[in-house]
Image (cartoon, rainbow, N blue to C red; front, side, top):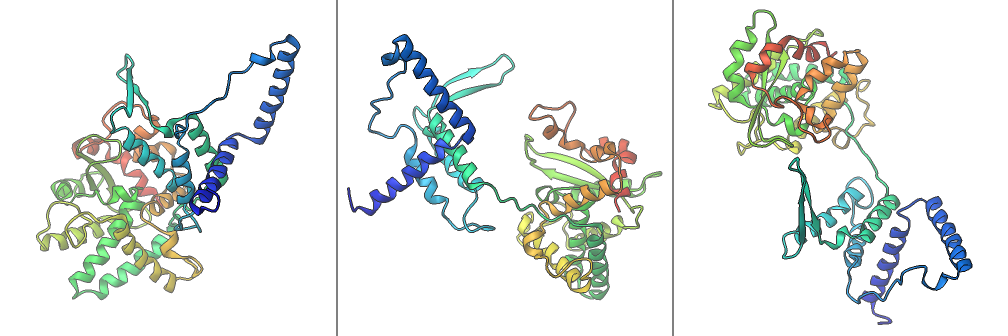
Length: 391
């Protein structure tokens, strides 16, 4: 209806969606296809087949069979305010498509026939509009138009880490009569150690388990040749089925002089005095595992103090809250510093051995991904080289 603002908005979105679907391919590809079409028609005309050389393009049904309504809604969603940019990014936008297809697959007729291969894998036919060819072209063209603004976590350098521990050691001495303050200090130190020296991601750091560490603590730190810390991770891990227990041994004291055992011993003693002898080591006030955001608070507090005390190490132009996160900063810093220190690739691979599934591109690798301490202690010498040689 002319003058109806809703209809006018619909037409505007439809035009944008069609343009996005057209430009799902490169300009050169589209133009080449156009030229080939002209040649095709010319050949068919010369043969006298022009009238029936191409199938009819309609009439189309009046209902939306292509997912145009969903596409228009997604275009409106793309105008929402973003976190790091003026509007949301494509990775956020595409969740709308995931919602719709997941919903359709729960409906009667949403999923068609299922095909199973001899190896047990297979696929099902999806009847969701979002899996139509046109909609896929729309999504691709929309992505090409929007692009991606990638803002990775800033890697924590060895100099920033060293300054962090200098700040934490001073605070530990200052809080001699403040157990709450010492608990925060030691917890921050252990988060830094787990993320940097074990090269763990944020969602892996909060899996550190007190009970398992206490169980193997004495055996590990008194190892006759290679004293180490039994960093035990427990819980449900990405791409793993069921509860798992995994051991990542860390050297007690690094070649550069970082006393890892001291900081974990401090935190374990404080938690033991509180009666906390099992469950997650990094826990919120509720007793549950800390979220990445909650662990970020510990990281940001110490980094802001480093920024204040050591401006040559961490410039005041750096936005600590926006650029650093336990999600990736510690792991990225460890990986970069390992390369700078020319730590052998096989040492890094040994440290990351439980991520073999990612390197296997979805195929289940040989051997168990998650290993208990009884299995890991046999290879302690090789498994602790990474943490030992990091600067």
